[in-house]
Image 1 (tube, rainbow over the protein chains, first blue to last red):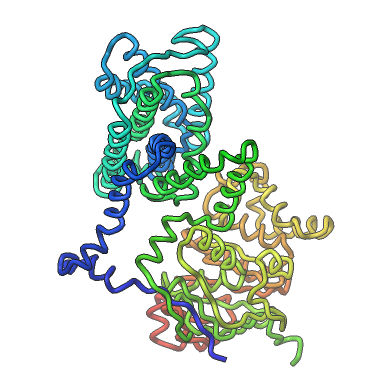
Image 2 (spheres, rainbow over the protein chains, first blue to last red):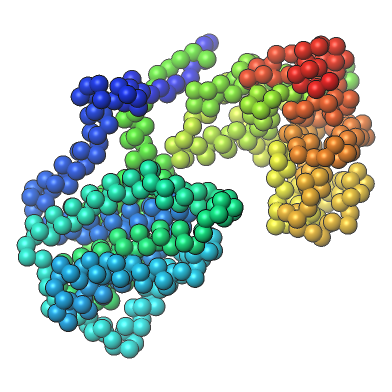
Length: 334
Length: 255
């Protein structure tokens, strides 16, 4: 009996697209830029084609996409497991809200909240950066709980009621296209950063071997702090955006969802890439919202879907699609 | 067949693929009971793959790679242990059958003490067996005696290798697989360990399969040797036969 083995080979178009032949014809060019183009076009036409209920969800999804990119970036490229999504969102949201409530216009308060919030988040996380392992996860998870209790107990920043009556985006298209633009810039920018920039190179080294980074004469904590700043800036922008989506800022911005969902999105979408978390978040948040008619059972169905993915599809959606896109399989005799 | 030259381990037409790359190409080998078999080859010759395929660890590797969608590992052929086909038997079951691997780069449990390391090795044995084999190991490697309370990660390379070999012995092996036991050791320690391996083989009748890149230190102790190159067996024979082959001498034995 002849024994057969499945062989995996790169598609011809992929091999050509890796070399100078990449620009030889439209086919190769489309092979290279096709997937990104589809994603961009999808993001651009979604705001005008969705019903109004789903437009709100798309805005929320955008925030989660940014958080997931931040989580995936820290986990896959820096080796830090961050549960600080809620910290970033809350920090950005409150700074933007406070500025706006004293009269700073929205188009100024959002960028200021993004930068200042990311700076504060990086500073408060600085003490745990030299440590490896779960410490970063624990501390980044505890800060938002701490902040929420502090606000409730002291009654500062509007206490449990929050600050209402803030500016909102002029209309839903401005709202969505601002988010689409930011997501596109962040997605491709981060992909470039981790793959082609020096900083990305160093950060991947930090993930693999911290001692070797130190031995190469690089300041480990400084590079980790830069990475945390980048991830925090994305989260803080998300928080500031949410503030001006609702016209209200409150303790719910420190909700644990913002910390946990990016983790799930990264697992479902695929670790080790920037686009994996994007796809994961773009699937999970709408699924979670679509399950709302089930009421309390929603979480049950949601959990079942998550467990299914982790157990039977643990390589992640993106890795699977990428393999199907780039390679084909056939049987050969051993 | 007389019990003296019973074939303990038989590998027949083994092929191992890492995705499309051939790691082991049509390898067949037989290990006689109570003898020491050497497997020699340069880096990437397939020594470690062969060892982990015999020990079954490749099943774990395959599962791990499948989970993260990485390299697809497949193998064909047959591995027989005492006449039983074990090609797809889980590694822990192989260990309880008596196939014990002492892995490459020692792989001691760095945060457990030396004594705890040895006890983990003796987990499958009865209390009585474990006590006698502990005595035997300490008798074989008296250097370990004062170090029993120390964390294994703080032992030197030679001490760790003795500990790892001892740990493998604690598991009551019938077939002891030593993957590069002399890796990164000083020449004097190499000789010391080679002597110990010979002693184990003589005193306990344990069959030993060991792999090495540089064959000179272990050459005097082996009974039969195989030379691997790019995953295939290019030469095999008794130590005398190998010794008389001038190509082998220069390439693998550095003589």
